[in-house]
Amino acid sequence: MRKRIESLDFLKAFLVLVVLVVHYCGTICFDDVSSGKNPALFWFTSILSGFFRGNSVPIYFVISGYLFFLSGRFSMEEYYRKLRRRIKSLLIPYIIWNTLAIIMLVIVLLSPFVSMMKYGEEVNFSIGNLLSCYWIYDGGFAGVNIPTSTAPINMPLWYIRDLIVMVLLSPAIYWLLKKLGIIFLSLMCILWIYYSIETASVYVPREALFFFSLGAYFSVKGKDMVSIFSKFLKLSTILYLLVSIILGIVFFYEIENWSYLNLLNIVIGVVFYISFLEYLSHGSIINTARKYFDVAFFIYLSHGLICSKMIKLIMILLKPSSDFGYIMTDVLSYIISILLLYGIYTLIKRLTPRVLSVMLGR
Image (spheres, rainbow, N blue to C red):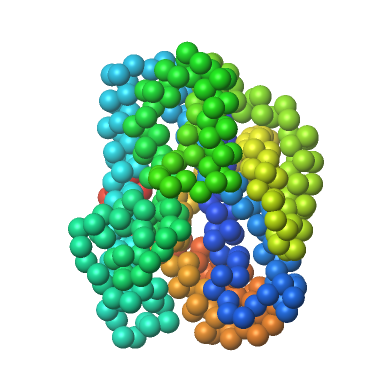
């Protein structure tokens, strides 16, 4: 069982790299580009989106749900014990890293020297605007309006926010899985599909509810999820490659009504990544990767603070005007950000390891 848990930890660390690919390798920071004028750039970003868009966080939720109920037993005493542990491992890092994002935003907005990094007009302080930074950031704190936002100010941390909600709801999820089993899971799947197509007018953690419950289902029912998924490694590999390539073509040509295909690929991706990384973990690679588990989490927590700023900085240095230049901007931003954050992690670990432990919830 320990080997199973290690393979899941290995997968979580690996998926951080996938998350960064999605966040860095896009076209949103580039002006006046299109698939017609920049076909190579858009094929590059479309294929990457086909393979990786939307895959990582559902897998995180599946793993979290599976590990949360892994003992197969659940009581209110155990719930309170888990709740205390999650305050340290989830809530405190969540508050710290969103607070750092607020501080960085204030510095950027007040500084006359970094206008190219700005995303906002001025600091518009109020209790409501401040609190929105920790729940769903609507831009009010910076004097702008972001009506489509569903994330806190440190955008990638929406996963941790929703995971905290799942922890709070875990007694109900456990009871419903015990009593209704696959029926409850099917209802959560329908909810996920519906709100992935239709925009909810209120906060609905659709991915968390379905995928956390999916992982939890295996533990509550005493099933070895990793072993079951591993039986479908070959099939899921073929389907994942095929559907991802089709999605890449769909994204490039901006074909409408592709959402169901993307949702299918997310489910296939869950099976593929868990089974494939479990297969890799039988070799010596996991022994080498183990020492990077913490730094991977650090990079996940911190990359949202520098992502767009790094891309803009590389754009100033490279002044891209061709597809190759734009692609190199994405790739270099990705690589340099990882190296920079790894260096910061190493420095903090050397100077103040206790502070680092608090920041990572260890």
